[in-house]
Length: 387
Image (cartoon, rainbow, N blue to C red; front, side):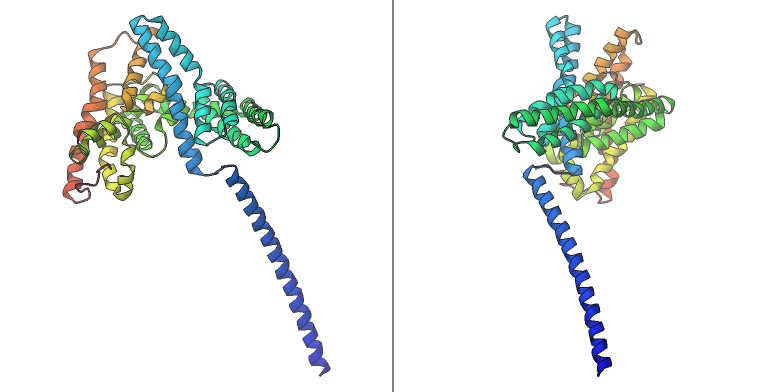
C-alpha cells in the first residue's frame, strides 16, 4: 500500500512538473503570438505592408511613372527644342530632367500610400539618393525611398509635433542612407548593366535573344520593364534589344488579338500596354508564347542585322511602343551620337530597321506563329478578349 502511494506521489509530481512545463511553453507561445498580433496590428494601422507586391510591383511601377514624368519627358522636350531651334523647350526639358530623383521618390511614396508630410519629404530623399547613386541612381532611389517612406509612416502622427518629427525622420533617414549605401547600390547596378551591355556587344545574337525575351516578359508582367532598364542603365545594343522585346509583346498582342478586340484593342495594346492581357495569360499561358517567340527573333535581328542601339534615356528601352517612347528614345540616341561625333548621320537603314523591328515584324510574325497553336487547340477564339 505504501509502495503504491509512493508511486502515486511520484507520478503526480512528474505530472505536475510536466503540466508546469506545458503551461510555461503555452504562456511563452501565447505571449509571442500576442506580440506578433500587436506588431501586425501596428503595421496595419500604419498601412505598412511588407510584401513583394507592394515593393516589387506597386513601388517599382510608380518609380517608372516618376521617371517618365521627369527624365523622359525632359529628354523628349530637349530633343524637340534642339531640333526645332526652340531654346525654351530645351530649358524646360533640362528642368524636368533635373527633377528625376525627386519625381521617382514621390511616385514611390504615393504608391506606398505615404501621408502628406512623408510624401513631401521624399523630394529631398529622392534627389540625394539619385545624385549619390550616380549612373545607378534609380535603383538607389527605389531602395532608399521605400525605407525612408516606411520609417516616416511609423512616426507619422505619433507625436504632438508631427510637423517636425515626421519630415525630420523621413529626410534624415533617407539622406543618411543615401550617403551610406547609395554609391554602392549605384555602382552595383551600373556594373550589372555594364556587364549586360558588354556581353551583348561580345555575343549580339545570344544576348539579343536573352535581353529581348526577358525585358519583353517584364513589360507584360505587372512589374516595370522601364524601371528595370533605368535601374541598370541599359543603352547601346542591349537597349536596342530591350526595345525590340517590348515592341514584340505590345504590337504582337495587338495584332494577334485583333479578331477579338478590333481597333480599340489594337490601340490600347499597341501604344498602351500588353499588360492588359495578363488576366488572359493567367487563364491560358499558351497565348503568351507567340509574342515571346517573336521577341526571340526580333532581338537578334536588331542586334546583329541592323545594329540598332538605344542611346537615349535608359528608361525608354523598357517602354516599347507605349506612346512611341521607345522609338523616340532610339531617335534621341541617334541625335546624341551625332552630337558626340560617334555617328555620321541618320541613314535610310536606320529608319528601315526601326520600323521593321518595332512595328512590321511583330505585327506579321506574331499572328503567323500563333497559327499552329490555334490549329492544335492551345489557343482558341476569345482567349485574348479584353473586357
